[in-house]
Image 1 (tube, rainbow over the protein chains, first blue to last red):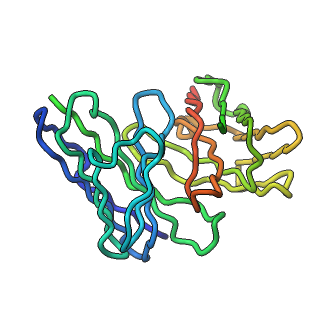
Image 2 (cartoon, chains in turn orange, brown; image 1 turned 90 degrees about the horizontal axis):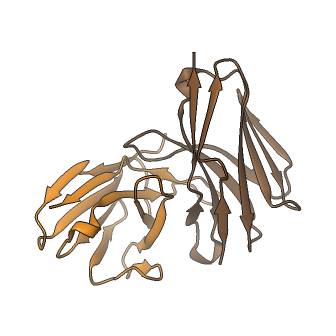
Length: 117
Length: 113
């Protein structure tokens, strides 16, 4: 089945530094990938839609200069948390839709637990 | 704005019983609704999708219903097992954003033996 790989699974960084998270579709091409953030006992919140070869579309309230998204190929999207602060500590999950239709299920990576100290 | 409510944060049942989880939504008319399972520290895994013109969908021990009049979906796990213990999320499509989904907070199911 379709596999989405996310790396790293855990990262601890100091406040003020930047962290890059990679999301790869291993056995399918994804022109669109989605980045979600999840706080403890909360729902997944859509942050942005990553579009291959063009700019990402950010949800309201998400700072595009802080959460840089690059989707340079059909199998890789990256999310960079710039100048990270403790409030950015969260569980970041990417997903992609390997199907053709808009009603195909999403396949998710296993998430990245970011801790900013 | 669209709102999804899974009105039980936690559900505890005994092995062998049927678990019933509820998902309600407002201010929206989705074309389809999906259910996912999420284990701690992992990404969600797709379980079932039901379209607006379908009233019921089954897959092995799982059953999903979709009532567009009540704006509600019910998710059933029959003959529940301890391995079914996880958080279950319902999700709706946001057609304006392509295939992006919005999720409920989830219901954490605990099945005791």
